[in-house]
Amino acid sequence: MNKEELQKIKEYALERHIPIIMDDTLEVIDEILTKKKPEKILEIGTAVGYSAMCFSEYLVQCGRIDTIERDEQRVLEARENIKKVGVEEKIKIYEGDAVEILPTLNEQYDVVFIDAAKGKYPFFLEQALRMLKPDGVILADNILYKGYVMSDYNKHKQRTAVTHLRQYIKEITENPDLETTILEVGDGLAISKRVK
Ligand code: SAH
Ligand code: MG
Image (spheres, rainbow, N blue to C red):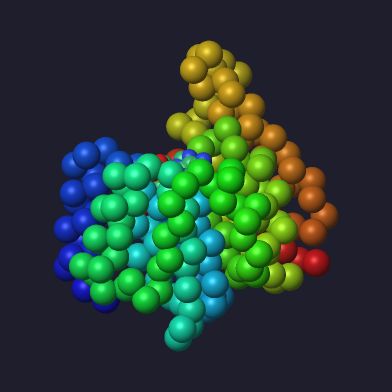
């Protein structure tokens, strides 16, 4: 993997305010993936491919990441980036709305990374659980959404997202099959391990 190219892609994404994974969040996930050595990862929200390329380092040989992105421009850019970095064998991009694509997938994943429309997190969770291996882990980025999720006051604009993020947190904490930790790294990361 061409790390210099990956660094350039990261900087270029940050310059344009594309919401790529934050360094401290990535550090936590790196640790999880190092232990887990995943064979298959599902990512919801590719953007320009940055997080998927970072995760691809931790796959076992012949492992794969399936990642979904609905923005046509970003899909094009992600495909170019993945080639530049030399990881095109490891990452498969599905172009379209994850709400439509997820129900068509029938794979088993070691890790699911949720990083797309906040209002859809409960639906993404349902789909992630359907495809998660018995010892798999679901990671949800932006779960604290700039502190709005834990605050009483929310502007109308954020209300729907906040409601759905709170519902997501309620479901993962109440589900007896999951062991959940919520970390204040980056914009908030929920880690849910399937224990049965
Ligand atoms: N995981 C990336 C960042 C993703 S940003 C990284 O860390 O590098 C979130 C992305 O999700 C955006 O590019 C947005 O277009 C996409 N997205 C949002 N809702 C989506 C949906 N319903 N289906 C597919 N992609 C979606
Ligand atoms: Mg994110």
